[in-house]
Length: 161
Image 1: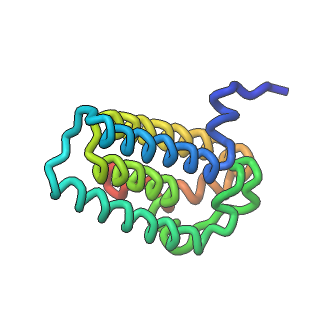
Image 2: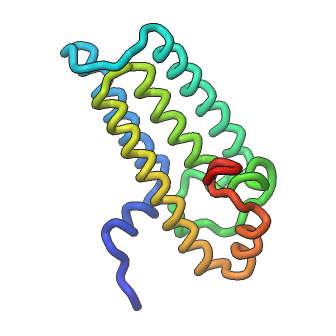
């Protein structure tokens, strides 16, 4: 039996816990950046308002996608079935997309450069997680997930990715 790498293990952990850890870091660096006058990019108030809008949109989109996927906050390796209704009939990873939008919204809301850099790193993190989860789902649900991937072409953003 093949042992999993530390990166694979991390990517398949409970997404809720990883997301909470990211949000604490992003909000913490945002607050520190404002208090300590770290370099910012804020085009006040445009970036702050747009960031707030993204945060609100991300929460609403996450809630909407979560209604169709009851196991959304569990470990990837404990998924019991393929969800292909609702928003999952258009994109394969709407919850990861909502986390990406949320993190970018937090960064724009604070307008602190280091927070934006960290938020951009989370884009890579959630993209890698979606790729790793798809590998796992292909192993567990072979034909069913292959058919799902064929019918739902886009991983997160229709027409792009």
